[in-house]
Image (cartoon, rainbow, N blue to C red):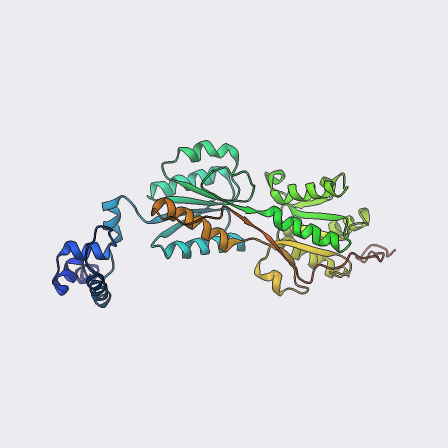
Length: 356
């Protein structure tokens, strides 16, 4: 069966015979070669005949000839994260439009696995690699020694790979969110997020601390609740925050999943969003728009970042001259979970605690 398929495959020789032209001319036209001197009428006729006959180029043969595989390696930290998954989809679809396929490896955000992923993609002949996620400075010497160009979609503003970095500017969106809350009378915030290695380098963490200090909060590190998973976040923890920090009127979450968990707990304990507390998430995932109340969130420009890194790739690999926007801002998407800061006193409603 496989031999029959190979025998039936339309070749450049078959097309040349049908149009009564040389193999060299047909090859130059179908390969979009710059030295092809055939007229536009001839080029159109050859391409139409190729389509009519069901011609498909032999990419393996082409890669052996020019030393390129037209494959891009993608390294991402997690597939279960909607944002990471969307980034991979946008990159895959965008590269396909230029004739490139992708190989995807997930590194779980671990430096050792990331190095192994890059080495595997290089061994498989990828023309370039795109890393989506946080890089640590100690990884750079190894990455710079790779024989394959490595690009980075970055969120830290450190531009660790100059000329090959698309920077997603978290600061713009976080400042928009904090200033929006401040304009509504909110002066005291609480940060809810994940406890992971390198949290101090997370721009969301750092920007929250900086803004709090700027507005007169001297101890922002003591206005944070970090858990290993959103599932570990519980009503007792939230109620403890409310009891010990009665001035807090808004929660800022490291992503939408944590924000939705906060809203769930507030609802279950009789708190109202946004009447009692405003809540802001990060990422703008699908669920943030359809939950009740709808979640205000800082949108990550996933599609835009993919488009810009693809321009970088095509400029280097295909000799294109696309203008590239190296920095893309996040933006606040304001929805129903943000309101005016409360002026009324709260009561404790958790089972087992007396109302005050």
